[in-house]
Image 1 (cartoon, helix red, strand yellow):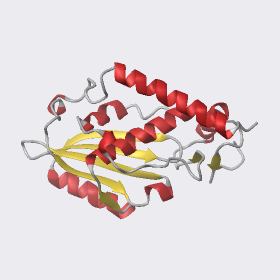
Image 2: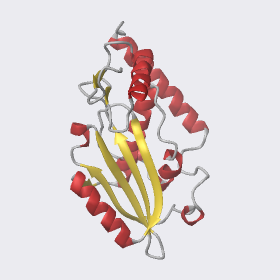
Image 3: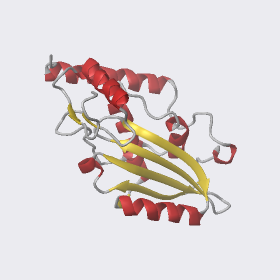
Image 4: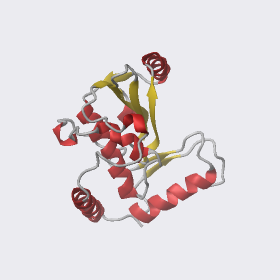
Length: 212
């Protein structure tokens, strides 16, 4: 049974308010432990470049990049594979790389998705917004998200003037990827049914036969 749209929005708003209060009590999200030793003091390290796919909200999936330039000339790089239609952060990576390694990585990325340079505060707002949207649907971000997110440092997402509308046509939309088995797809759909109600989301399943 489909939930009443007003009731669903109220439920999502209540979840967001509880999450915001919890975050406030914790003292913010920019200083979690666990980064490799070389990247412990990213606060104050200048940003090198931030990239966001041009068609992220048209396709639904893409890699968002945030880099800072270290004193020795190397770059601290965080990459977030975002599913802005449903699952939030599907993958996250943090690494220290040379500038040449970064340029090679970026070149390969640009062949798959054309990206634009974006303000750091907007990258934080985009990524954290995707995480919150997915959590409201019952999905947690990739296990390495907590480590990778620390690259945001003290950049304030609220300073970004842009707004981001997650989902597709005002509803969550699950599109299976090449590594999503029938079992994983079923689990995701079951989670959507539990948290949204049947009829309150879209699904696009390809290449998995009739196992769902």
